[in-house]
Image (cartoon, rainbow over all chains, first blue to last red; front, top):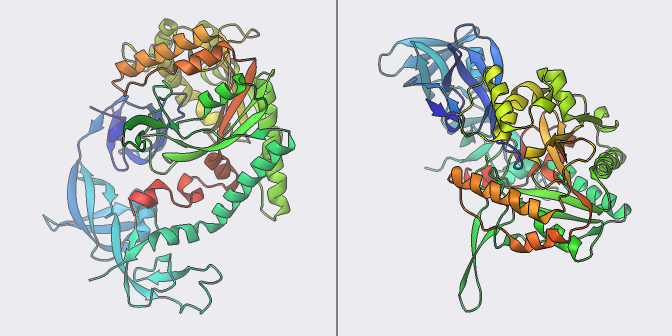
Length: 188
Length: 337
């Protein structure tokens, strides 16, 4: 048993005998009314999506899962392959489990997988991931004066983000996976 | 540069935000309201169990310390001003609430627009709110910004008992006390704990059966809350058992909370004491009751007041799901970047 503070992406909860994985959640506090947590859930056995709203502090049956270090290998079709760092076995994770996080994957990336009953039910990315900038257009002189302090750059996994105009091709930068934004230059 | 990158990425939304704030001011000025300022540092805080205040310590020139709190809303000050003779006032101020999420639908520091009309009831505020949104929509369109069509329509107004009938198939008139609401929750398959307040029980059903239907085709006002959830509002004479309190919703998110204000000081004190007891039960920080406020309520004229989050209004007009997208430097970019 736990309460609503334990609800997070990838948590597994039991409701009416069924197991669900939390795919997204939102804390809402109207102030002059009851605070609550809205969740989007996916049934582990049937994959069906549902929504549930819990009031803050309510008891929630949070099921223990194993946290396993895994390394991303490659994508094939709708599946992403990861290697268990302890057993060296590989696991295929379907695209709908990764959802929007898939864009951050790159070969060799270490992640923490939530494993329940032998199945990966959620993947937790590092908060910041280092990428090499593959393409970055040269900054045009005067850009800063006109208020353009960012430009779009392409990362070594094909993902595009906005980065400061001083970033050059071949440089290593960090991306914050919680906000999707530029998270700084890697300085060694 | 992380912070500058955030600001640059959200520049279009931020520009709309600052224009919307300007239009809100213009709207209230054009309606003959006076803009007032209220303090951000107060000696004590309101008693709502779901609102936690941030502690601050101030020092005078002799280095004596004064323990206070950042304002969680401007309501008590506004009412003191009304008692002192102000009428038709509005304020745009910062409000601070602790223990809230950094991003999503909340930022611990946010901006409130709050206004009062003397001698009127809460229906006047519903009109104000609607007119203000139409004013903002018109001005944004003049500047070339697209505005969703449903923000230019008139707002749906739904009495809460009707919503319960429609979506939960319940006659709310029969469930206006704690025991009956507890029984109803059990019948609906919930497992309420002993000692839950009426409000907690009400929201178990409201949040799972009703809220998802609110404001999906445009802003929607819901009004007449059960008297046990009156907060700072007056009991309704037209709908016995209910209070003259309303909220407005857009896409399932609450954007406003207004009242015909309670003018009975004894009742006000009773409600604050009940909330204070509830805070103690929940082991929350204890705040002194603001006796100056109780004294003021003794002389408060009939009036009505409404409060809206400007950040939320901007989210409505920009379609931003995450509040961080409409704030130059939200907490998530100040502390987590």
